[in-house]
Length: 185
Image 1 (cartoon, one colour):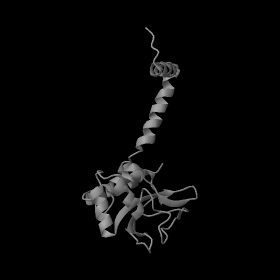
Image 2 (cartoon, helix red, strand yellow):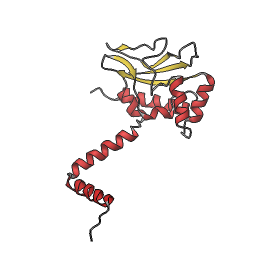
Image 3 (cartoon, helix red, strand yellow):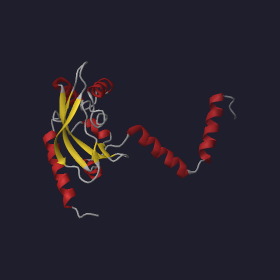
Image 4 (cartoon, one colour):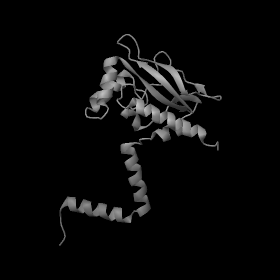
């Protein structure tokens, strides 16, 4: 028994189109779609492996009349070689973003993700007027070091306000030690 329903004919048309696509193409589309929605969450080992330098930085939130500022306090894994450091200038323009949120970005996170597990960390940083964190760096196309991260940055485990920050820093030190003990390729 055939149906005159427009929705049914659209569904039949879609069903026919889907059946005609090779299974491999569907698998590729499914993987691409999943990555586009979620983004990666890198492990500490993956972050260290893809970084050529790691810095401890301090972010001070500005005001209406003064920009946010970022400064390198110490090098956990110093930069080496001919790659230049895109210094965090007075406004931190080159470094602020997902990996190192400015006050404006952080305010957006607080509003857009009210139930996110790191809300308390973000609020503590906002209340304190800034935060200290670890930033992973690698060269960009111009050969300047810039922050590198994925969605794990929003967990804020590298932030001094995070309750498990000390444990995270210990894991980071162990990961860097293990990296330096591996034979060079």
